Length: 314
Ligand SMILES: NC(=O)c1ccc[n+]([C@@H]2O[C@H](COP(=O)([O-])OP(=O)(O)OC[C@H]3O[C@@H](n4cnc5c(N)ncnc54)[C@H](O)[C@@H]3O)[C@@H](O)[C@H]2O)c1
Image (cartoon, rainbow, N blue to C red):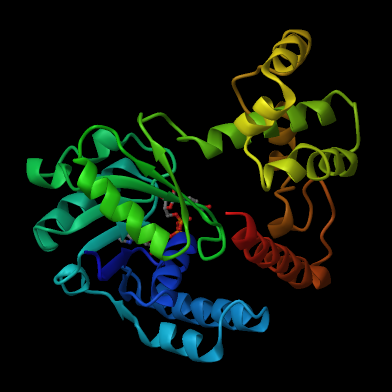
C-alpha cells in the first residue's frame, strides 16, 4: 500500500501534486535541484491552501497539517530512500527524463512505483535506461494544471506492468479524490489533450474565418457543448442525442471544418507579436496589469466551485 510519496521537480505541476497528496494525509518529500524553487513552491502551497480554506474547501487545521507533512529536499537519494511512490514533474526533455528515471530506479526502494507526468514524450523511449524489474513498476500519470484543483489524472496501462500495480495507483488517486482515465496506448497527448486540441483548432479557425468574435466563440462553447461536458461525456452526449443524428450531422459538417495539422497561423502571428495571453497582458482579450490578480483569483474560484459541485454528481 502506498503511504510515502516523493515528488521530483517543484515547479508549476510538482508543487500542486505534492500539495494534493499532503492534503489527503500522505507524507510527501518534495525534491528540486534548485533550493530557491523549493522555497517558492512551499510559499505557493501555503497560499493555495489558504485559498482552499477561504473557499471553505478545507479547514485551517487540515491545511496546517498538510503543510507540516511536506518535507522539501535537495538531496535526491534522501528524497526517495524510503518512498513507496515517486512521481517526477521535471522539465519536458527526453534525455533529462531518461537520466532522471535511471537515477530514481537506482535510488528508490525496489518496491517503489515510479511515475512520470510527461505531457508529450514517448513513454517507451523515456524508460530506455530502466532495469527490467522497474519497467514493470513505471507508468505515466498525467495531471492537469492547476494540479491541486483539476480532478483528472490520466494513467497509462501500456502493457509493461501487471494489473495489480495499476490498481494500486488508481486506488491512490481515488483516495485523493482524483478521477483517473486508463490509457491503453502510448499516443502523443493521451486522451484529454487530444480532445482539447480538436476543440481549439475549430475555435481558432472560426476566428480566422471571421465567423464570430472571440467573446462569442467562448460564449457558444461555455453555454453550449461545454455546459454539458462539465457533467456528461462526449460519448454519453452522443448516445443521449442518438448515434443516427451524430452520423448525419458528422457527414454534413466535418467536411466544412478545419482539418489542419499545424497550429493556426493566426495564433502563430499573435505569438510573434508578443500577444501571449494573460501573462503578457493581451491574447484574444485584453488584461490590464491592475486586473490580472483578480482575474486569476476568479478563475480559481470558479474551479473550486465546480470541484465542490462535481462531488454531487460523481
Ligand atoms: N505545466 C502544465 O500545464 C503541465 C500539465 C501537465 C503535465 N506537465 C508536465 O509536467 C512536467 C513539469 O512541467 P512544469 O510545467 O511543472 O515545469 P516547470 O518548469 O514549472 O518545473 C520543472 C521543475 O523541475 C526542476 N528540475 C530541473 N531539472 C531537474 C532535474 N534534473 N530533476 C528534478 N527536477 C528538475 C526545475 O527546477 C523546476 O522547478 C513536464 O513533463 C510537463 O510536460 C505540465
